[in-house]
Image (cartoon, rainbow, N blue to C red; front, side, top):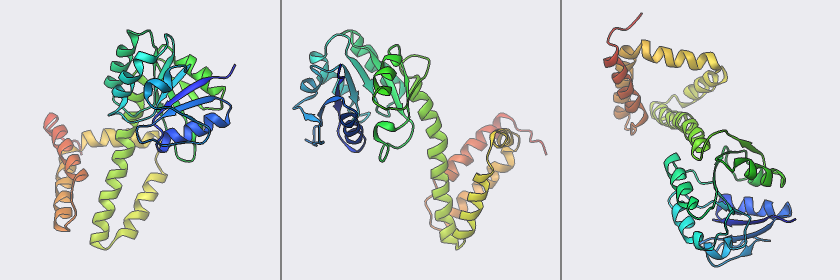
Length: 261
């Protein structure tokens, strides 16, 4: 039996996923408020029209529009239709979606897309949580998706993704800020090579050293990051990551004033 899937949001991510679903043999209908059309996807005029006869709904719009999309679709959703929220929203919002849909006997699963969608589409690794997570996995893996079920309620999957984002996006921001400063100081090539060499040697022991060293040497490192912030300002480079690091180190310093040598 052909799976009927509604895709809400046909932007960069939604359009690639919808296109791959069509290629995999699913019966796909879609809605996007901007009127975006995707080959093979039956265009519908609203969220309600798109979900009316769907077995599975993929909400791939944005965190800001996630609740609106659900509210607009609810009157037309059949009992038991599976609602999958693929947006990068907070765990709290994912829980609120599940609670809103529960009154209509519509199960919600929380899907975290674990890598950029462009170029991967339906094959983007997905982490899914919620009571109906296995049902979601069964439906999409049968169409070629890479889905991992994460034990726990709605909000668990996105929580893991966002905590990883604190590190990964924070690291990216630190690299960008440091290289801006290095370009202004005339040593960008040196710093780029230094960063690459440091990252190449990372392992679990490195993580332990970073965490333990930050706490043990908070006093000295707070002074160091205060100086780094001043340098960026002297170079005319906006300082955001450096002062944030300084403030965290000051907090740790004040919590444990005695520093080991």
